[in-house]
Image 1: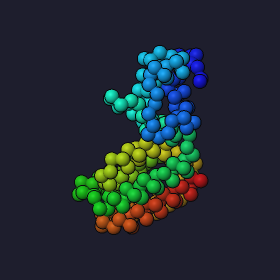
Image 2: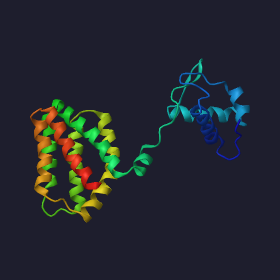
Image 3: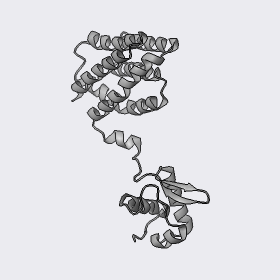
Image 4: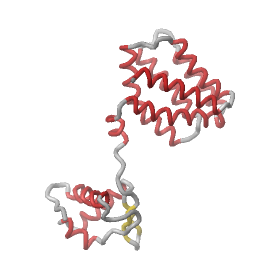
Length: 222
């Protein structure tokens, strides 16, 4: 069995256990051996094993059940969301935005409130304010897209969108500095079309307009 040599030992122990799970030593739903078995295998004390198990439980890989033992609940640990986004190509991020925002627009068409509509209309006006810098325009654009997702009243979709914002914002600012939008009026009309479809409770149209706008953005960034 791999032995641990460097500190912090609990972090090392967690990675060794995760490696063994990834390698298929324990199947999904199976019970891990007890601390008295794992500790000598890893070359650490039982308290270190307990801390390693706690770490993996926090990452969703293990579940420690009182009186029953420790069970495998996932065969790998998801990467940190920010690290994934930092590494992802911006086009890949836009593709993920399409999945999130087209669905959010459809949901918003059925769930939007008068307050949601007011927020979207205000954000629309904010996109076209006179004398905006590129950064201010991008911030206003992100505010509109967020208002649309918020109108879906789906917290998971909103959390996903908020995760995209820093990566997308930087890319949009850089792109607009090099290559401004060919027609600001057409770009704004595309946003108006999404909001109007949501206001009219036309879910399919809202999703189609949202997807079409983001597909155009993807093409511009490719």
